[in-house]
Image (cartoon, rainbow, N blue to C red; front, top):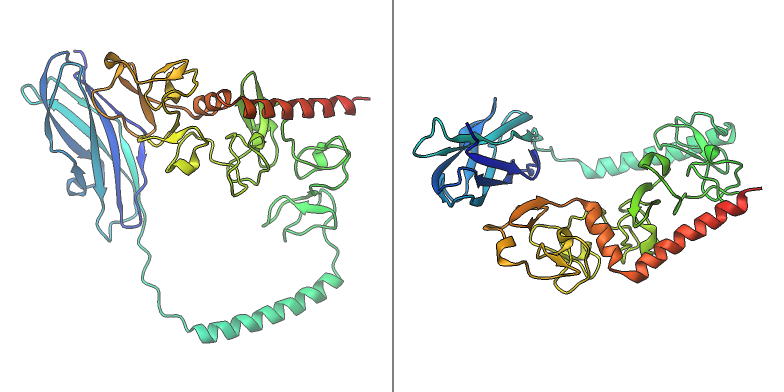
Length: 367
C-alpha cells in the first residue's frame, strides 16, 4: 500500500527551556495525489502524557493534491515532572479512511531536567570573612610551596595545570607539559599548538592544507575553501581578519563568527548576506550566487532572483531550510560559507594569499 503522507522534522530532538517548555516544527505532505481532509494527533512515548502537547492550528485540516503544510507542536511539562529522556511522534490519518490511509512521523525526543530546590539565604558577611581568611592562607601556603617545589618539565604530567617556564599544560585540570606558543621548538610534536613554524617557534597551523579536523591541531578546524581545504580558526576564537576564520567572518569584537550557516540576527551574518526567516545567513536578490540554497528566494540564476511561481512552496519552510523547486530542503553550512566567499573577491583573494604564504614558508624549511 503506498504511503499516505510524508512527515519530516528539522531535528530529532527539542531543547526545553528552564520552565519545561519548547516547540518543534514539522512538515506534512499529502502523498495521496488527491484532495484529502486529514486529522493530526500527537502520540506520547513511554512516560510522556498527552496533556503536555498542544498542536497549533487544530487537529483537522484540508490538504490539496500534493499539498504541504507546516505544523507546530508545543511541549509544556508541569513542575515536578521526573527528569529523563522522553519522546513523541505525529500520527496523520485520512478522516474518511483512518485505518488504511495514515502515516506516523519520526520519533522526537526531549529532555526533562530536574528543577533545583530553592536556595537558602546565605550569610554573606560571614561568608566574605571566611573567604578572605582562606585566600590569605592559600596565598601564604602557595608562596612557601612554590619556593621548594619544582614544576613539571616537558612531556611530564601536570595534574595541577602548571608547568616549568616556557611550557604549558594541555589541560587546566591535568594533562602533560608541552612547549607554549611563541617558544622555540624542533618539531610540532613538542608544541602545545601541534605545529612548529618556519622561525623554529611553536605557532598555530593557520592556513595549512588539511584533510580532516584531526590534521588541524589546537583551536583550528579543517574548512573547505574553493579548490582546497585549510586549517582555519574555530568559532569564538580570537582572530585578526576574515581569512583566519573557518566561517570567513571575523566579527567586530575580534572573535570568529559561527560557521554552521545559522543565525539569530543579521549581526551573525557577514554582509551582504542576511538572517532570513528560516534562521539561515542567505543572500538577497541581485547578489552573485552559484547555488539556489544560498539565496533568500531559493533561486539562483548567476544572481539571486525571485523564484518562478512553479518553484515556490505552498507554505513557509521550517527553520534551517529553504524552498527549492517547490520543496523545503535542509541547507548545510559549507554551501553558504563557500558561496558567500565566492561572491566576495577581496576576501577570496586574502584566503588564497594566506595559503600561498604558508606554502612558501613550508618550502623554505625544506633543506
